[in-house]
Length: 155
Image (cartoon, rainbow, N blue to C red; front, side, top):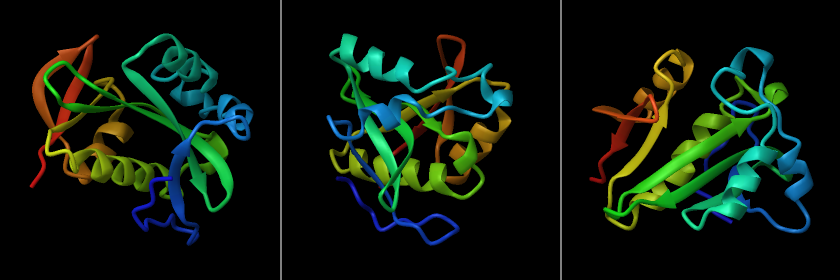
């Protein structure tokens, strides 16, 4: 479990944990709001399959207290940078600070290695862009698969 002490607006402890035999079904069923489907898959199951098929990515379950509320994954690029990808918070759990807490928790953990932490988002996904900017991620000017690359440089 990765726990940085972050809480959502309801006071629930937000942690990220390995996907395992006990939680994978709940993670697979995580679904975004309908208006977000231009940027993320209909279910987190797609991200789980991706991480099963790729040695680069590792899936994690996002918890609020003891309830699975999302998915987030991470990987290491050839240059050593750490990447956050595949974040999906269940539509019913959004706008409560869960996504913010999950990204901050994982970014802090990844930054401990002393490498930049990167992520990407669709240029039309302004809510994601605003969230990542507020957490200190800055666009690099690069694009990855038509998405804006943003970086958090370790202090």
